[in-house]
Amino acid sequence: MFLEWGSALEWNIVFTFVLCLLILFCIGLSLVLYRGRQTEGNALWLHLLGLCIFPLFLLPFGNFTIFEYSKQERFCASCHPSMDPYVNDMLAPEGKSLAATHYQDRFAPGEECYTCHANYGVHGTFSAKLSGLKDAWRELTGTYQVPIKMSQPFPNLLCLKCHNGARKFMREDSHTDPGGVVARDLLEDKTLCTDCHLPGHMLPGRAKAGVKAG
Amino acid sequence: MASIGELIRGDWPARLLGVAQVLIGSVALLGIAAVATLNPYLLLGFGAVQVLIVVGVVIFVVVAMLSQRAMVLEQFSPGHVIFKEGDPGRHVYVIKSGTVEVVSRRPDGGAEVVDRLGPGDHFGDVALLRRNLPHRATVRTVTEAQVFRISPGAFVQLYANLPEMREYLRQKEEPHLRRLAVLRKEPTPGQPSPPVPPKSSPPSTPRGD
Image (cartoon, rainbow over the protein chains, first blue to last red):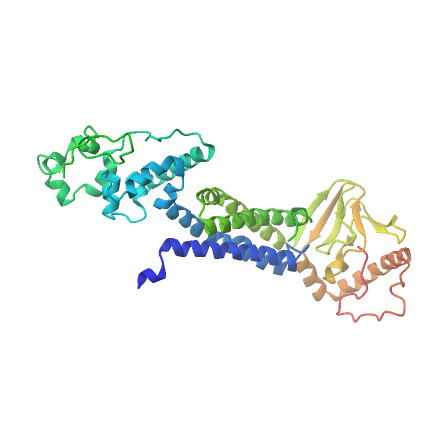
């Protein structure tokens, strides 16, 4: 039943569209009705709507739309030449990479790329958006090399933000130190998750041998 | 849709408001394109220009606050056109210092100075009182001038509540209107044909400036 109502993102897209239309309508109406008298009493009431109230509503709705839509897998996939190999690997029904298995498990429907690649909290969101902006600029200007590479090794923290404390994860001895806490080596990236597990993405010709450890 | 040139025409608050309209209107247009197509570049562009909304809102607030001020002292350099013949009436002006001249077009297309105004004189009142009436003459400064610009709301309130002021304005206007009418070869105002308005109503004959 709730699905019929649409997601928050879908509603925000509609609100953003309607607010933009209302702003343009108010500006157009003021030009027709108050041409040459834009700073007079009644015109100012119309401007209050078109140049103040609706725009101030557009700020949160518009930004929410942009931020939420940029979390979507289809947003990342829109940079075709650079992202296609990674997206294809993730979507492959028989894929063995971590991205493919996570995707098959439907752990974050529609937001798989963002969920794995963005760090904790507000700082993580901000740095992910900033990094995404840089990537979009490189895509726009063509200043990238295929296949694209990560600027730094994938940090364990990004895996641990979901797996830390999970029963299945904590049962594995190699994940914990004595006392049942997460192994310091993992927290400090001395041992990478992908040292034992299959890599996040397995690109044609770049497949890395890994040990599936359950 | 008016062109950008038309949008920014007018006195400086109106121009500023035009700038705010252009800024916010552009963001709204980009927003429509972005959410309608869900194109990543348009969305990112839409995000990047959101700051223009803030700028536009700030401009609107400043203009709205200034427009609510009953009287503003403006300074003009010599030769500055305060308003042109045909412009809609927006404000009433009272000269604090300096000289301005009232210039009207003759039927043959030439221009003629019909009046010179100095400290204490006022202009722009009739076009304002008759909302759809444009100014019938151009007013420009001769010397450096300081001019009080009175907001329409404040002026109309004074006009409605001060019978002495109405009478004063009517007496000041008549000779001026007569000069303009002669210049344009129109029926002379103030002659028997047009009925004399009651004291409580605005003047029925437009003053040229």
